[in-house]
Image (cartoon, rainbow, N blue to C red):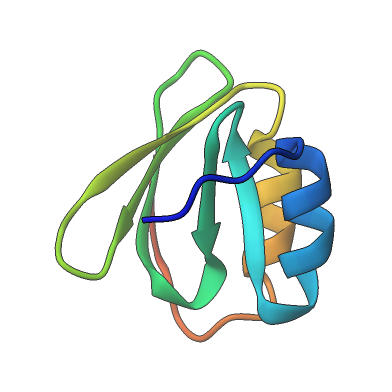
Length: 79
């Protein structure tokens, strides 16, 4: 565990070349670890990652996050 004094935006920018995407106000995820995508019907959704963890994707970042997955290997999309 590390303590960082910087903004999430700065961390996101630094790690974007590593395939890390922002999916919520305080959540970053490696795009290649996403295995399943589910819409929640309200403009946002859930990403299921390796290991089965379900991560909430905000409405504000939903489209951007989906676009970031277009370069990844197969991801199961559920509506």
